[in-house]
Amino acid sequence: MTELELLIDFYKETERQGPGSSNETLKALSFINIDKKQKLKIADIGCGSGSSAIILAENLDGQITAVDLFPEFLDKLNLKSKELGLHEKIKTIEKSMEDLPFKNEELDIIWAEGAIYNMGFENGIKKWRKYLKTGGYLAVSEITWITNTRPKELEEFWNNEYPEIDTASNKIKILEQNGYSPVRYFILAQNSWIENYYKPIEKLFSAFLKKHKNSEMAKNIIEAQKEEIKYYQKDKNYYSYGFYVAKKIK
Image 1 (spheres, rainbow, N blue to C red):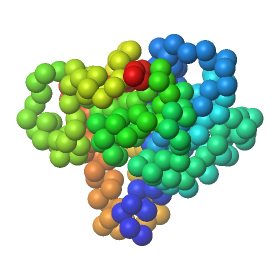
Image 2 (tube, rainbow, N blue to C red; image 1 turned 90 degrees about the vertical axis):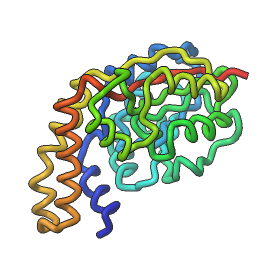
Image 3 (cartoon, helix red, strand yellow; image 1 turned 120 degrees about the vertical axis):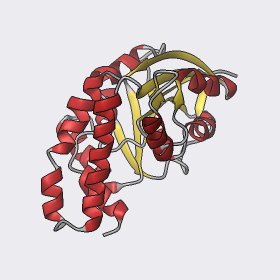
Image 4 (cartoon, rainbow, N blue to C red; image 1 turned 90 degrees about the horizontal axis):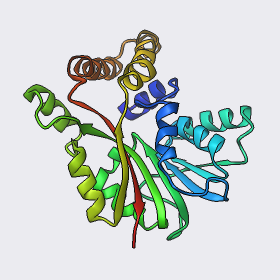
Protein backbone atom coordinates (compact mmCIF):
# COMPACT_ATOMS: atom_id res chain seq x y z
CA MET A 1 0.00 0.00 0.00
CA THR A 2 1.09 3.57 -0.66
CA GLU A 3 0.99 6.18 2.10
CA LEU A 4 -2.11 7.73 0.50
CA GLU A 5 -3.87 4.36 0.43
CA LEU A 6 -3.02 3.84 4.09
CA LEU A 7 -4.39 7.26 4.99
CA ILE A 8 -7.64 6.50 3.19
CA ASP A 9 -7.84 3.14 4.93
CA PHE A 10 -7.44 4.91 8.28
CA TYR A 11 -9.89 7.74 7.67
CA LYS A 12 -12.60 5.64 6.04
CA GLU A 13 -13.32 4.28 9.54
CA THR A 14 -13.95 7.76 10.94
CA GLU A 15 -17.22 9.68 10.99
CA ARG A 16 -15.34 12.92 10.35
CA GLN A 17 -12.11 13.48 8.49
CA GLY A 18 -11.42 16.74 10.33
CA PRO A 19 -12.66 19.00 13.13
CA GLY A 20 -16.27 20.14 13.01
CA SER A 21 -19.77 19.57 14.34
CA SER A 22 -23.38 19.50 13.24
CA ASN A 23 -24.05 22.62 15.31
CA GLU A 24 -21.33 24.56 13.52
CA THR A 25 -22.54 23.45 10.11
CA LEU A 26 -26.00 24.71 11.08
CA LYS A 27 -24.52 27.92 12.48
CA ALA A 28 -22.78 28.66 9.17
CA LEU A 29 -25.96 27.81 7.29
CA SER A 30 -27.94 30.27 9.43
CA PHE A 31 -25.87 33.15 8.02
CA ILE A 32 -26.85 32.35 4.44
CA ASN A 33 -29.67 34.71 3.54
CA ILE A 34 -31.37 32.70 0.82
CA ASP A 35 -34.81 31.16 0.48
CA LYS A 36 -34.03 27.71 1.85
CA LYS A 37 -37.35 26.33 0.58
CA GLN A 38 -36.56 26.95 -3.08
CA LYS A 39 -34.93 24.27 -5.24
CA LEU A 40 -31.33 25.09 -4.57
CA LYS A 41 -28.21 23.70 -6.22
CA ILE A 42 -25.47 23.06 -3.68
CA ALA A 43 -22.00 21.56 -4.00
CA ASP A 44 -20.23 20.05 -0.99
CA ILE A 45 -16.63 19.94 -2.19
CA GLY A 46 -14.19 17.55 -0.52
CA CYS A 47 -17.18 16.06 1.27
CA GLY A 48 -15.38 13.05 2.77
CA SER A 49 -17.86 10.63 4.30
CA GLY A 50 -20.52 13.31 4.21
CA SER A 51 -21.24 14.70 7.68
CA SER A 52 -21.91 18.15 6.23
CA ALA A 53 -23.81 16.89 3.20
CA ILE A 54 -26.25 15.04 5.46
CA ILE A 55 -26.91 18.17 7.55
CA LEU A 56 -27.40 20.28 4.43
CA ALA A 57 -29.82 17.73 2.94
CA GLU A 58 -31.83 17.67 6.16
CA ASN A 59 -32.16 21.46 6.23
CA LEU A 60 -32.33 22.56 2.58
CA ASP A 61 -34.48 21.75 -0.39
CA GLY A 62 -32.93 21.08 -3.77
CA GLN A 63 -29.99 18.99 -4.98
CA ILE A 64 -26.71 18.51 -3.14
CA THR A 65 -23.77 17.32 -5.22
CA ALA A 66 -21.18 15.82 -2.88
CA VAL A 67 -17.73 15.72 -4.48
CA ASP A 68 -14.72 13.76 -3.29
CA LEU A 69 -11.71 12.16 -4.94
CA PHE A 70 -11.96 8.95 -2.93
CA PRO A 71 -14.77 6.43 -3.55
CA GLU A 72 -14.30 4.86 -0.11
CA PHE A 73 -15.75 8.01 1.47
CA LEU A 74 -18.49 8.39 -1.12
CA ASP A 75 -19.60 4.79 -0.52
CA LYS A 76 -20.10 5.60 3.17
CA LEU A 77 -22.08 8.71 2.31
CA ASN A 78 -24.29 6.83 -0.16
CA LEU A 79 -25.03 4.18 2.45
CA LYS A 80 -25.86 6.74 5.13
CA SER A 81 -28.04 8.87 2.85
CA LYS A 82 -30.07 5.78 1.91
CA GLU A 83 -30.50 4.82 5.56
CA LEU A 84 -31.80 8.32 6.31
CA GLY A 85 -34.01 8.55 3.23
CA LEU A 86 -31.94 11.39 1.78
CA HIS A 87 -30.46 9.61 -1.25
CA GLU A 88 -32.66 11.47 -3.73
CA LYS A 89 -31.32 14.79 -2.45
CA ILE A 90 -27.62 13.83 -2.40
CA LYS A 91 -25.74 12.92 -5.56
CA THR A 92 -22.11 11.82 -5.16
CA ILE A 93 -19.39 12.43 -7.73
CA GLU A 94 -15.85 11.04 -7.66
CA LYS A 95 -13.84 14.03 -8.84
CA SER A 96 -10.91 16.22 -7.91
CA MET A 97 -11.87 19.60 -6.46
CA GLU A 98 -9.63 21.08 -9.15
CA ASP A 99 -11.68 19.46 -11.92
CA LEU A 100 -15.30 20.10 -11.05
CA PRO A 101 -18.18 19.21 -13.42
CA PHE A 102 -20.31 22.33 -12.86
CA LYS A 103 -21.37 24.96 -15.36
CA ASN A 104 -20.68 28.65 -14.90
CA GLU A 105 -23.09 30.25 -12.41
CA GLU A 106 -24.85 26.94 -11.79
CA LEU A 107 -24.67 26.82 -8.00
CA ASP A 108 -26.49 28.68 -5.24
CA ILE A 109 -24.12 27.50 -2.49
CA ILE A 110 -20.60 26.07 -2.41
CA TRP A 111 -19.73 24.29 0.85
CA ALA A 112 -16.32 22.96 1.89
CA GLU A 113 -15.50 22.06 5.49
CA GLY A 114 -11.84 21.44 6.22
CA ALA A 115 -11.07 20.61 2.59
CA ILE A 116 -10.04 23.70 0.64
CA TYR A 117 -6.48 23.40 1.97
CA ASN A 118 -5.97 20.57 -0.54
CA MET A 119 -5.72 23.16 -3.32
CA GLY A 120 -5.03 26.22 -1.17
CA PHE A 121 -7.49 28.80 0.12
CA GLU A 122 -6.85 31.53 -2.45
CA ASN A 123 -6.62 29.14 -5.39
CA GLY A 124 -9.85 27.43 -4.30
CA ILE A 125 -11.98 30.52 -3.86
CA LYS A 126 -10.73 31.91 -7.18
CA LYS A 127 -11.39 28.75 -9.20
CA TRP A 128 -14.75 27.94 -7.60
CA ARG A 129 -16.16 31.45 -7.93
CA LYS A 130 -17.22 30.96 -11.56
CA TYR A 131 -19.58 28.14 -10.56
CA LEU A 132 -21.53 30.38 -8.16
CA LYS A 133 -24.46 32.48 -9.24
CA THR A 134 -24.10 36.19 -8.56
CA GLY A 135 -25.48 36.53 -5.04
CA GLY A 136 -24.64 32.90 -4.29
CA TYR A 137 -22.81 31.88 -1.13
CA LEU A 138 -19.48 30.30 -0.28
CA ALA A 139 -19.04 28.57 3.10
CA VAL A 140 -15.62 27.14 3.92
CA SER A 141 -13.69 26.22 7.04
CA GLU A 142 -9.94 26.79 7.00
CA ILE A 143 -7.07 26.44 9.48
CA THR A 144 -6.56 29.93 10.95
CA TRP A 145 -4.34 31.71 13.46
CA ILE A 146 -6.56 33.24 16.14
CA THR A 147 -3.82 35.40 17.67
CA ASN A 148 -1.27 37.74 16.09
CA THR A 149 1.67 36.02 17.81
CA ARG A 150 2.28 32.39 18.67
CA PRO A 151 5.12 30.09 19.81
CA LYS A 152 7.87 29.70 17.21
CA GLU A 153 7.74 25.88 17.35
CA LEU A 154 4.00 25.91 16.65
CA GLU A 155 4.37 28.38 13.80
CA GLU A 156 7.09 26.27 12.20
CA PHE A 157 4.98 23.13 12.53
CA TRP A 158 1.92 24.59 10.82
CA ASN A 159 3.86 26.55 8.21
CA ASN A 160 5.43 23.25 7.23
CA GLU A 161 2.06 21.45 7.19
CA TYR A 162 0.15 24.22 5.41
CA PRO A 163 2.04 27.38 4.34
CA GLU A 164 -1.23 29.27 3.71
CA ILE A 165 -2.22 29.25 7.38
CA ASP A 166 -2.95 32.88 8.27
CA THR A 167 -5.06 35.18 10.41
CA ALA A 168 -8.76 35.70 9.73
CA SER A 169 -8.19 39.31 8.70
CA ASN A 170 -5.86 38.21 5.90
CA LYS A 171 -8.23 35.43 4.79
CA ILE A 172 -11.10 37.92 4.67
CA LYS A 173 -8.94 40.32 2.66
CA ILE A 174 -8.32 37.54 0.11
CA LEU A 175 -12.08 36.98 -0.16
CA GLU A 176 -12.67 40.69 -0.73
CA GLN A 177 -9.94 40.89 -3.36
CA ASN A 178 -11.52 38.04 -5.32
CA GLY A 179 -15.11 39.13 -5.76
CA TYR A 180 -16.70 38.06 -2.48
CA SER A 181 -18.42 40.08 0.22
CA PRO A 182 -17.70 38.54 3.65
CA VAL A 183 -20.89 37.78 5.57
CA ARG A 184 -19.74 36.12 8.79
CA TYR A 185 -16.68 34.51 10.38
CA PHE A 186 -16.43 32.36 13.50
CA ILE A 187 -14.01 29.80 14.91
CA LEU A 188 -14.78 26.18 15.72
CA ALA A 189 -15.26 25.28 19.36
CA GLN A 190 -12.53 23.23 21.02
CA ASN A 191 -14.90 20.27 21.40
CA SER A 192 -15.11 20.11 17.60
CA TRP A 193 -11.43 19.20 17.66
CA ILE A 194 -11.20 17.11 20.80
CA GLU A 195 -14.53 15.27 21.19
CA ASN A 196 -15.56 15.09 17.54
CA TYR A 197 -12.22 14.43 15.88
CA TYR A 198 -9.16 13.63 17.99
CA LYS A 199 -10.71 11.28 20.55
CA PRO A 200 -12.47 9.16 17.90
CA ILE A 201 -9.33 8.79 15.79
CA GLU A 202 -7.18 7.95 18.83
CA LYS A 203 -9.42 4.92 19.43
CA LEU A 204 -8.43 3.61 15.99
CA PHE A 205 -4.66 3.77 16.40
CA SER A 206 -4.03 0.32 17.86
CA ALA A 207 -6.35 -1.54 15.49
CA PHE A 208 -4.89 0.29 12.49
CA LEU A 209 -1.32 -0.62 13.45
CA LYS A 210 -2.31 -4.23 14.08
CA LYS A 211 -4.13 -4.45 10.74
CA HIS A 212 -1.04 -3.21 8.92
CA LYS A 213 1.37 -5.34 10.98
CA ASN A 214 3.12 -2.35 12.49
CA SER A 215 4.66 -1.41 9.18
CA GLU A 216 6.98 1.58 9.17
CA MET A 217 4.58 3.55 6.98
CA ALA A 218 1.61 2.82 9.26
CA LYS A 219 3.61 3.82 12.33
CA ASN A 220 4.65 7.08 10.64
CA ILE A 221 1.01 7.92 9.95
CA ILE A 222 0.03 7.35 13.57
CA GLU A 223 3.03 9.30 14.87
CA ALA A 224 2.07 12.23 12.65
CA GLN A 225 -1.46 12.12 14.08
CA LYS A 226 -0.10 12.03 17.62
CA GLU A 227 2.16 15.00 16.93
CA GLU A 228 -0.74 17.07 15.61
CA ILE A 229 -2.83 16.16 18.66
CA LYS A 230 0.06 17.09 20.96
CA TYR A 231 0.30 20.55 19.39
CA TYR A 232 -3.42 21.14 19.69
CA GLN A 233 -3.55 20.07 23.32
CA LYS A 234 -0.66 22.41 24.14
CA ASP A 235 -1.40 25.38 21.88
CA LYS A 236 -5.14 25.32 21.14
CA ASN A 237 -5.51 28.97 22.16
CA TYR A 238 -3.45 30.07 19.16
CA TYR A 239 -5.26 28.43 16.25
CA SER A 240 -8.46 26.77 15.12
CA TYR A 241 -10.53 26.28 12.03
CA GLY A 242 -12.16 29.52 10.98
CA PHE A 243 -15.53 29.24 9.26
CA TYR A 244 -15.91 31.83 6.49
CA VAL A 245 -19.27 32.63 4.91
CA ALA A 246 -19.14 35.01 1.94
CA LYS A 247 -21.39 36.16 -0.89
CA LYS A 248 -20.40 36.39 -4.54
CA ILE A 249 -20.75 39.93 -5.83
CA LYS A 250 -20.46 41.25 -9.40
